[in-house]
Image 1 (spheres, rainbow, N blue to C red):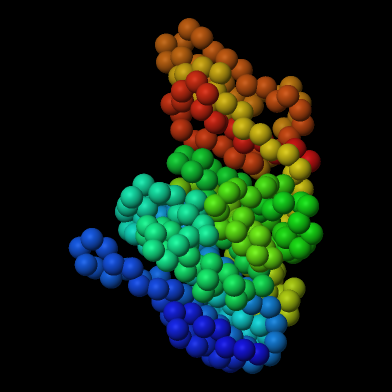
Image 2 (image 1 turned 30 degrees about the vertical axis):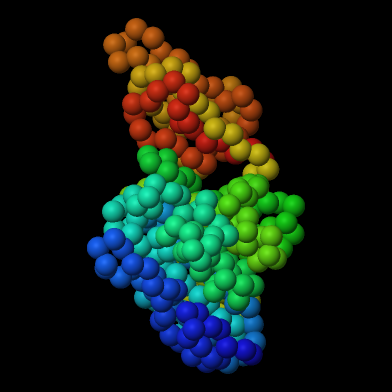
Length: 316
């Protein structure tokens, strides 16, 4: 087994260390660091990345990483190595916002540049120091502002290795999803390093179901690759539903939105999923299902504008 090298620090087989991905200076001169936890067995095995906080307001993934570290699952790995980055986008986390201070989305800065913006430099360091050394990874996200996602893992069903990893992780939903340009997932895939995206809950709000399912998924991966003892903990396994397509239902009119459907539930064709109405009780518009589907995402914002995405539906 060779050493893992992060920011010029070598982590040898059998070592557990906390290192910084790199150092970045803010306009005030304050130093920003990205703590990276590395756990290594002395035996050969896969190198797995678990990371969260790509967007600063997506706290569920950060809580999943905290639970993984706190439970000491990795301190005596049977084989392989685990890299955990609890918060990639530290500045945005401090400000509880999605974007970097310059307004850029970090997940649209890949593969990055060593001489670019802060986001571009962080992306470059992730690609050159982390992604190149792993076998595969999982990137933990949540829904956007007021968008509550039911626990789901996203991968391209045409990618056999990525699809197999999604089935092992076994989130309640596996969503067929192509990667976006300049994203971590796209750039890693192009280098033969599958990184799957897990989505659960909404921004700036902890979601117990999403946290539990994400944690269980990580442990299922570790058990599958015999990196932790099989009897170490009992992991429930939900029924996993494959969704080949997904669409957003958008508001037909501006006003108030409400639904009686719970996210994660099955909805039959022609069922009424919700209503948009004006604030004065004069006009009301029904939202009906065009086909059988599952409600995998829900906009919790009661005040909507015409065209706003309000219901995320997935089809088997």
